[in-house]
Image (tube, rainbow, N blue to C red; front, side, top):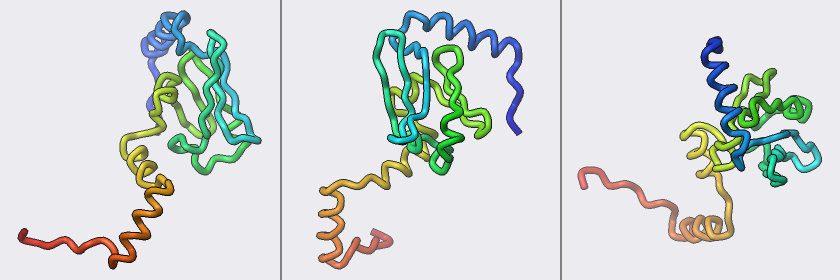
Length: 135
């Protein structure tokens, strides 16, 4: 069950949005671009930020129609009401795409030529060495 937001919390969010109006991180629009699979955030200073939408926690398996229902609130909060998912614009821009455990899981899935070469070399050597107990 999602906790209800009190009137004082809502007022504080509005105040923060008002205070951020002159911030470079004050967003004026957010949308999902289905052909590229990216969340696009436009800022008041003319800058645009894009991120693959399915990198965000709880959006990994969302359909294009659900991702397109992103709402920008107060110039700094993103909400997918139907999916019950929320992010802050400053968080996304700084690379926070979910909880610490989600981020760690995603980092472990990283693929690079160097990681693939290291895995192949390790396999040629018989795989990962067994841990010795009582060391």
